[in-house]
Structures are given as structure tokens and as C-alpha cells.
Amino acid sequence: MTVPVILITVFLTAVLSAMLGMAGGLILMGVLALLLPVPAAMVTHGAVQSVSNGWRAVILRRFILWRALGLYLTGSAGAALALLAVQFTLERAWLLMALGCVPLLVWLPAGRWSLDAARPVHGVAAGFLVTGLNVIAGVSGPLLDVFYQNTGADRRAIVATKAACQVAAHGVKIAYFAAPALTQSDSGLLWLIALALPLSIAGTTLGARVLARMSEAVFRRWTKIVVTCIGLVYAVTGVMELAGGG
Image 1 (tube, rainbow, N blue to C red):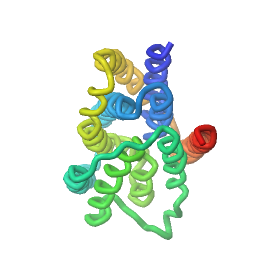
Image 2: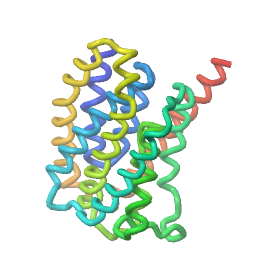
Image 3: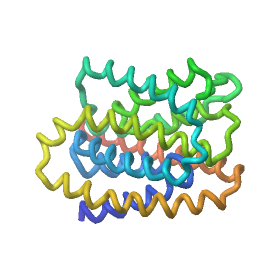
């Protein structure tokens, strides 16, 4: 049942991510962490999300904020170089707890922090921090969202630019965990990824159509609600698993 569950989850989470710009990746990472070794989960998640985000960026390419993307890529490259010096993998319980904490970042008050991905320092910082968090926790959408609270862009520009940014972050994650994942897993992992990628594209295409019909108010409200609920589930699951293991 592991493969069917993962494939169904890939499709449904791709739909959700295309609608909200995140949340789907959170769900997928949690499911993969429960069903696969952590390195294999990271690589599978990275591959699926790279295709999902990449296709989303292609569909919405005319809305991408190219300057913000360039700043982000500069910071992401810096994070990749820094990560070359260390190698670590979180245990599953701690990974779930990290996944539970990441969504809380969407509640940071926009006025107090005044972060804007289009500003040079903020854009580069976004690339560095988001890429680093993506390697540690597997997902980083809520943190990236913090940098887009004050851009003034509409929902399509936010989703399109964040999608392009996340392709880079997931690429770094794949490179970081590829060796341990392939060492611990058999060729079945590659087949799983191959089957999942077309489903990711199909889900993204469907979700983009829903996004086009969604209002700005609904988009912003449900993004916070959905990711917060997901985070609470992961945090509780991680604490219970940690307590059970002790």
C-alpha cells in the first residue's frame, strides 16, 4: 500500500500547492517521512516538488517577479556552499516536530518585520534562509511566504515567483541527500519518483485552474488556516513519537 498512498498524496498535494502556493509540500513531506527513510523521503519530496513547482512556474511564467527571483537565487547559492561543510539528518520524530513549527512562521506580523523579497538584502536573505530550512526540515514554504507579505503583488505573482524560488531550494536538497538516499534504498525509489512526476504535473495543472478563480481574500485567509492545522498535526505526532521512543 505504500506506493499507492504516496502517488495519491503526490497528486492531491500538487493540486493544493498550485492553489495556495504552499501547504501541499508540508503534507507530502509528512507522509513521505512516515513511509520512507528520511534521506529517501527528502530526495523523493525534492524531486516531486521540483517538478510541481517548476511546472507551476511555467504555467504562471508571465507573473513571475524576475528581480525578486534573481535576488533569491543569489542567497540560495550561498546556502548551498555553506551546506557543503556539514552533513546531518534529523531523526523522524524531530523532523515531524520541525515540520510542525515551520507553519507558525506565516503568523509573524507583517508590519513589524516589514520583509520584502523585492528588496536586495531581504531577497538574498530569503534565498539563504529558505534553502537552509528546506534542507533541515524538508519544507520552507511558510518562511518564504513571510518575505512576500509586503510585496504588494497579487496571488498569481506570489504563487509563480515562490514556485520558481522553490525549484532552486529543492534542487539543493536533492543534491544534499542523494548519496545517503541511494545508499539506503534500492532501485524502487527511482521507479517511485518516475511514477510520481506525471501525477505532480497533472495536479499542478488542475490546481492552477482553481487558483485563477479564487479571490485574493480567500487565497490569503485559507493559506494561513491550512498550513497552521497541518503544522499542529505534525507537532503532536512528533511529540508522541518522541515520547513513545523514550
